Image (cartoon, one colour):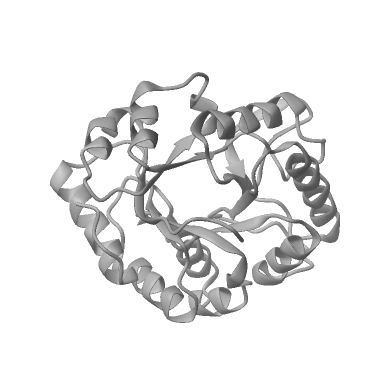
Length: 270
């Protein structure tokens, strides 16, 4: 896996573009691919500084029963070229079925049929991309019935069938384990950590007995503990803070970035 060491980064969003640009030690960021249609001046300025920019897709619907839309795959490839990215990423999820758009990332059933559909769509996508693809398991509030795999076994077989890398979200690991009443370390230890490209870290909150991966709340101590556990097992190339909406003051964002860097044993970006 010929990818650069990325350190600690933060997702680029227009609302916090100035904050992101002002981070002196920033080495990488991530941009939502569907929001990128032309060379954005602020993103290009980051790239000229040597900051790695990774396009992150949310609309491919890799887990759908239908083949991936060639135009959407072409756009993701175009984003990689616009940003000079070393890789792109997407989700193990579906967002449309039968011509209807869900508007959300929905979990795929952990069945052999779903695994076959995912494998086919990931292979189609990888064949059209100029760079590697990293796939991200999502946080779920429910599991489909009649699962034929546990989550770790499902992900492991999917990665074995494809050339994709793993975008590991430790907040999602925590959320899924908590909502299932399981040990997050058991899930972590069941994954092929050698395939991890980089790692997402985000905040969440509990509501009505379920843990929601909100991206608007502070990072929990338990999630930072998973960062430490992951680094003790196999340090990844980078960690990225995800924030979407309800952005806190700059001082709070700096504190979260510093907390991630401290937990990972990496240099701060602030």
